[in-house]
Image (cartoon, rainbow over all chains, first blue to last red; front, side, top):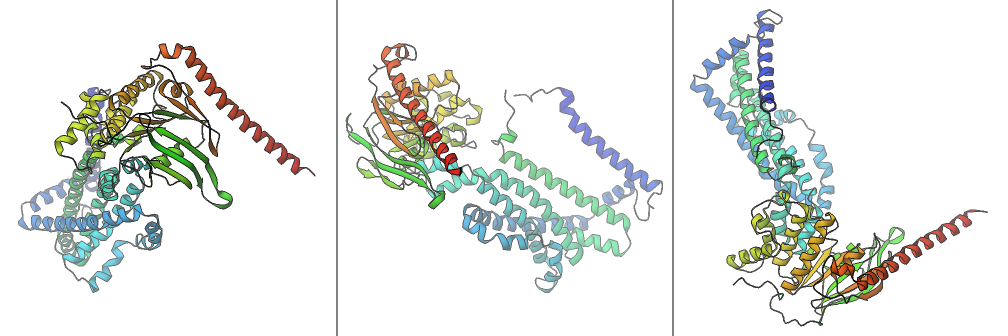
Length: 265
Length: 291
């Protein structure tokens, strides 16, 4: 089936608009720096930054650091998922548990993850365990909340239907409740994946744990401004890649969902 | 030869034997001052292979009653007996078809997997399961759509999937809660004839809740008229119209018009009475307010 009302113009427009906005942003960056609005000392030109990034990409060190950041991110997000989804199902499916844990959750949730860094220096120390903990802590909350809402939003008619056919509680959980909450969990994952990256990088930057953040810290202390910006851009690209992967997963998981169906009639 | 679905697990059943009995069932939601009496006292029975329609004014607790019968809701008082055994949870010999087919079918599952849902926990071979699914879909004329998703089908077709799912479960009795209330008139007629055909083919008992008087007379062997809430049974009317029923010929019969009028009057009077009651209550209330 072709896209509804799919003229070439409407199909091209989003791509063209995106390319234009990126080009405009890069041009502005270049101009601000070149015309001295902000000195090149503080903000290297766009072209300089990308040249720096390109030359960094030729080094083994860069890729090793990128690998470490990705590892910290992945383990943190994985840990958060393994904990948040089952706990979310539990708290979402029982009114009693939901009420009982509301206060502790609302107490812990607003704590800025970065506020835990001093505690981590004292407890887990400056190693990957702290990075994973921080990333997991940040990613845990959006996933937990999304899972809880997903489970609560299961259609009572669907549950009654399964019950009327003698489908037991456990089978109801994985045949009705879970598939029905998948859209919520997928959205939670997409949000959590960005949060986990930010926190993995933060841990490296402030705690000196090996990774892109640590290299940036070192570059900053040596006054290598070009490198600092190149690393910021590299992290941005990493975030973009993660976003693309997770929104693809989300779209797949939602194939059946009304928001993703080709509009009929 | 395809396996037979009917027979409810090979139980011996002869026409006229009592299958379902509803004995002094009442249902109250909440307690104290905020209590709502949905069902006051309802008793009736359904014989094996009988088609019984339950009609009543809107909001008279028909759905509550059906949920109690299906074992989804515990009655406050009274008993539901299926072949003499008390129903405390959804029995294997009953299948429910809900009005909201869009919410009752799982949108992430194909038509095949939706019909398969109630069979997964039954001790059957894979071949037997697939045969039941295919036979049920064949009976409702949806074989070509077996690998589609429910939301790719029209409303009437979705309700046919729900009917197929109930048939594949091999129940002795089908409970239907206003199943055709949210489809257009043409589709509704088609579905009515489908359910009459399926009833013959599968030798099944049907308890059918509806607010549509014409539908209740057209489909059933007996119409049970309920009162306004808190619900009681107002009348039980035998429908001795000849089979097979036909949307045009049956509805042109003088007997059809007579029965339809009879049920209408019962329900109308019910509404007038409850209206008068309300007016009377209001009058006394206003009087009482004056010094």
